[in-house]
Image (cartoon, rainbow, N blue to C red; front, side):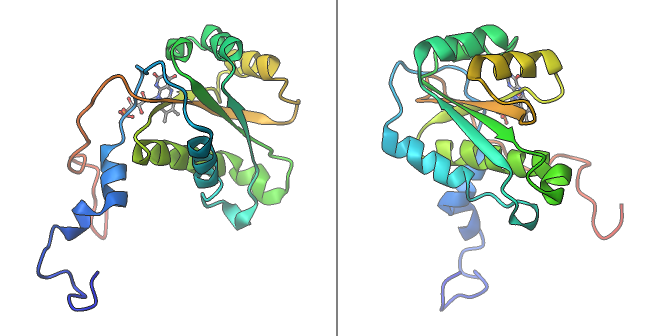
Length: 187
Ligand SMILES: Cc1cc2nc3c(=O)[nH]c(=O)nc-3n(C[C@H](O)[C@H](O)[C@H](O)COP(=O)(O)O)c2cc1C
């Protein structure tokens, strides 16, 4: 909101032009990547954004394994039945959670780590990168394979993998509100 237009009355669509709103609306799952590495400064920015996510009682139960080593990326691609884009992608961030960190982490590590994952994806899009979230949680054989490849200790859970790189595909942004999903005051 501008000082002289606190209600945004002169341009009712101003909010939708905001770069943060544009990043949220424009993010799509990208599964084709250019053979171009992600610069270290951008990786650092992504990880700062992941760590800026909200967590229950600020418990921050996450751990991130940043993977840019080709054989390790390929091994993850081999392990994940829907993760073949890992063979092409230059970067992956494996998002893990420590449920034993404290009582809040025990209850909320999945929500906390999902918020970090979403921040990663939105930040990637804002930086001109593409990403896709690969689910690992709730499939014990996938989680076991990822744990083995990355030496993740027992007791640390794996939420999922953010596969990241410069996009080699273009997708239209999401638009609108899902019909039937919106309820006003009462269901
Ligand atoms: C928990 C979760 C698990 C997912 N697992 C996979 C996956 O294993 N492979 C994949 O290609 N996409 C996966 N996705 C991405 C979804 O398919 C994608 O978000 C959905 O189709 C909507 O498309 P959009 O991200 O472009 O809006 C996953 C997304 C979430 C949130």
